[in-house]
Image (cartoon, rainbow, N blue to C red; front, top):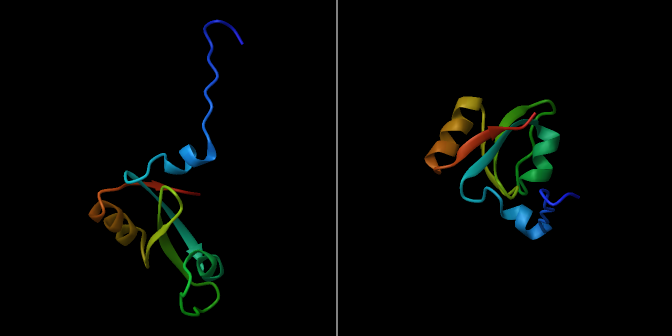
Length: 85
């Protein structure tokens, strides 16, 4: 490391809070993936796809049947949406 470089250390706890209250992650997911992320979700037909919105820390916020509805949910909660691929 040179004199002009600094090493920045971020703890896992600090990383978990980056974007909290400001960013939401959107992702289209199938029924099998959703079951693990949204506890208590009713059974769905295999292959069913929905859009999920998650807080920056990974907490599920909502499910929507379309991308536009998930975007609207982010904006209603004053969150900047980011898509995950």
